[in-house]
Length: 197
Image 1 (cartoon, rainbow, N blue to C red):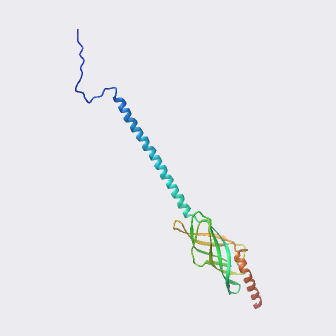
Image 2 (cartoon, helix red, strand yellow; image 1 turned 90 degrees about the vertical axis):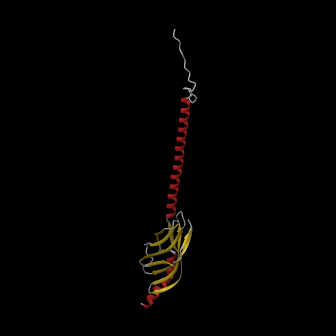
Image 3 (tube, helix red, strand yellow; image 1 turned 180 degrees about the horizontal axis):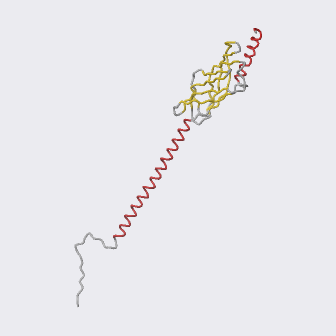
């Protein structure tokens, strides 16, 4: 009859029973997965915020750089004739900022047969939706000025992003305040020309 001997190792202080190693590894693996998922979520959130800020920044730059104007003759003032059938008048041009950001109108000029316009050199700051009256000098040839063709006014404009841009706007002269202001002096000039002609 043989005797079976069971050997017990009494020196194995650091060893854990075989049944406990799997749950410890599983818990460590779960912690690692949670950290990876958290890092991924944080990355998505930060990336989304960065993309949103980039888009907002681009939209703000576009808004600050855009120019939309409306202009029309506002009034005429004093002046006189420098030659037969030619008037030199002071006037005003109304300019409305139809864009989304403030702008500064530095200059306004325009020319076509019969009409010349240039500003008197005073920049005007215009808030969105605001209107400015720009003082201008007008040179009007009575015989040619009041046709149906619009006068293209060129504006030099500084936008909110400190860029200077050139924009144009067509202004109707026929039937305008400039036309009305010049009508009587032009009639007087025509009468004088007939008397001396």
